[in-house]
Length: 330
Image (tube, rainbow, N blue to C red; front, side, top):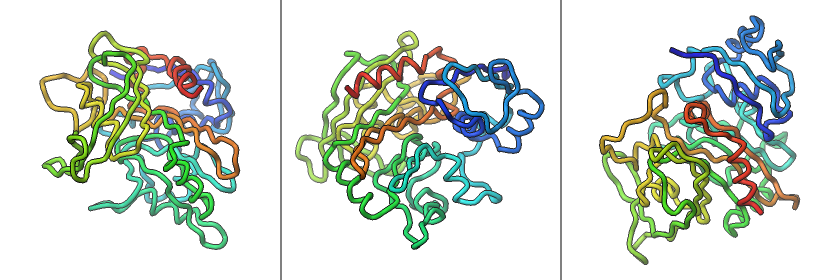
């Protein structure tokens, strides 16, 4: 049976409007439902009533009642019929200036089109075209079921400079993942060659021999932040290269696949802990990249609802992960 939750505002969430903070943590809850909860006083901040426009401060405690809309059967967060693409994109906006948008991409929403896909970020970006009709441009990708930081250029020049930063590996991307077991050593470097292959689950990556045809070198750095006994571990993962499914394939390669990964987690009788959703637990938590204007752009995305739920169940402290991220960036 669902129970009341209490979530603490993290330092990287300072200044967020309450409605945007709530949407980031509970993406499947409609704004109308949230308004009802606010009006009735069922959601509270530090024990007091709150407005949807209230700006939050680090350390504040948010009381959240049981939410029937949030659960394993909740649909992916995509625009509803009554919500425009522009409104939806602004609801997941983390940063905006005259050259760059940064979005918190929801799990389950594709970045680009593909077979059978009619709704994806790239198509929606047309709704944010400027007065000259110039559509924002993608400069990197996230897997459909991976959530988190997605950088989009607003101009052609910004796209060129951001793409160059990704190619030159001057960008730093930090992902959070929940994996089966606890890797040894607790910090490490995974270096393999990866090649694409087909299969009943669709396209996936396999570890190939050095120099194999159509194989690309892939390097990932990882570190254990916390663990739940020997069954589960919270990792920070930093892709040095940017190959398709790299983090997912590398986690499986070292024997610690990511929880909820239908492509790379082999069904060997391992059981998902009770109360945890069987969704991919991989989140693009933070990106640090040279801004087209010169200064570093450093953006962090809050956890999606299903991962926040798992973190709460396991007693993981987000602040500990933030400190780990800071350590990696020095």
